[in-house]
Image (cartoon, rainbow, N blue to C red; front, side, top):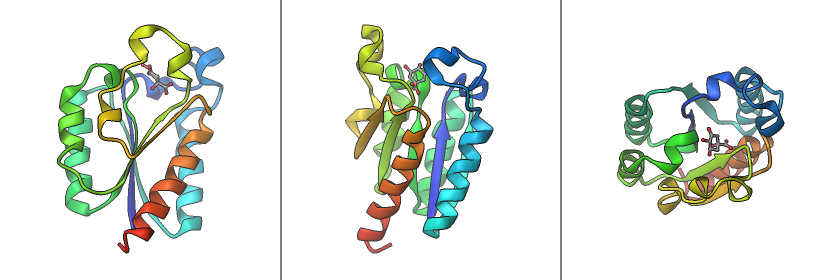
Length: 147
Ligand code: DQA
């Protein structure tokens, strides 16, 4: 089946952006790793990044129509977006939330996530490897749901 991997604002600069926090891998590297793993597991991937909230909402609606699973790193929208939470609440397939950094070790404003109110699981602080673990989890949840 199909897995959407959605990335929020500033993640287009991954690898250049605060590498002491987010590491040196680029988003293209992450995408390549996600595609490799998904095809190994027999799944297809739609990999997207946007700095605009509405695009992420539109992709969640698209995933809903496709009956896909979602891996999402909402980036700063994690901490601000009721609209992304509402979009995810229209969605019934597995959702895993990923953060490259350990948000709980950082500023207090990063400790709350709107998206966690809906996510089936949350990965934080495992670097970009978190995406791989999230894909494995979504893949097994989709399979165990018999889809
Ligand atoms: C992030 C953590 C967020 O707090 C931050 O706004 C990001 C990236 C992460 O992957 O660690 O942009 O989601």
